[in-house]
Length: 345
Image 1 (cartoon, helix red, strand yellow):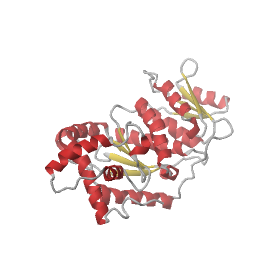
Image 2 (cartoon, helix red, strand yellow; image 1 turned 120 degrees about the vertical axis):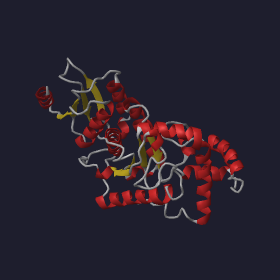
Image 3 (tube, rainbow, N blue to C red; image 1 turned 60 degrees about the vertical axis):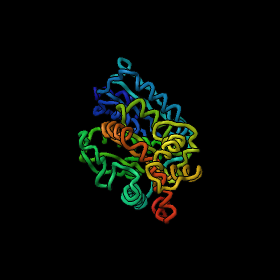
Image 4 (tube, one colour; image 1 turned 90 degrees about the vertical axis):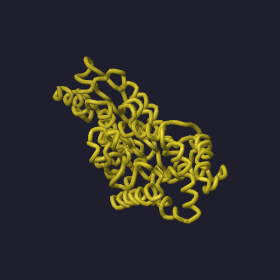
């Protein structure tokens, strides 16, 4: 079958990818977006001989890709199945002229500095201010879930510029999607002691928050709902995160302000020494709980996320969100946030 697929692609002047390792939906996401990132604008056929398209996921994914063609370099995607082709085949073509700009890949030194900034954020801000009850440091996350069978493990950071095999004609959103699906595949397939959560640092062009959340909500989130196993956690972080700019609630975004405001009353009853924030302070501090030095996607394991949600709902939700607002505002007053949340290169 492999030879048939290669011959078919070559006969039609297509680049061929034979993704026999893609047995599950998250492998398919990785194969397609990696293939797109490596291809640049070279027309490509991606064969998926081991994937069974039970629910029409491939057809719906083609819809997501084509709907987002403007941020994916103008790519057009379609899929064929046996008997028209030897194995299910995703075809990628790029009509001229190219749509949008190409990803200006950061120098390795810049990318490594972004990774370092993010490590500092985890150790000094996220852990230092206690914003996440399950993370103590880069080395220890998923804490407090051992009784439910989830073992602590390290936080891992990846940068889009360091994933390798990127064509010079890759759109930034393609690089983001390749980074995302590589992370999803690893966090599902690798054991917990190797990685319990990923922080994926995205291309610098996404320093504009609206550009970032548009790509997250319309490309990453919609493809995630089609291809990921249920419950894969994803959280959007950004150096200029502002919930008011989003205008709606969807996966990956911070909880609505109304909910946090209601939880604040109960928190203040239990902590009478804490100062109640005004509406502006509440909104600003709530946004800052999602601030990171660079545009970042956080990935969480399905099992970890589900158990953490149970703990969160039963024990922590009413405390964590208002407490984080109070801690952010206190840190602001003391000048402790300077240099921790405002690192952008």
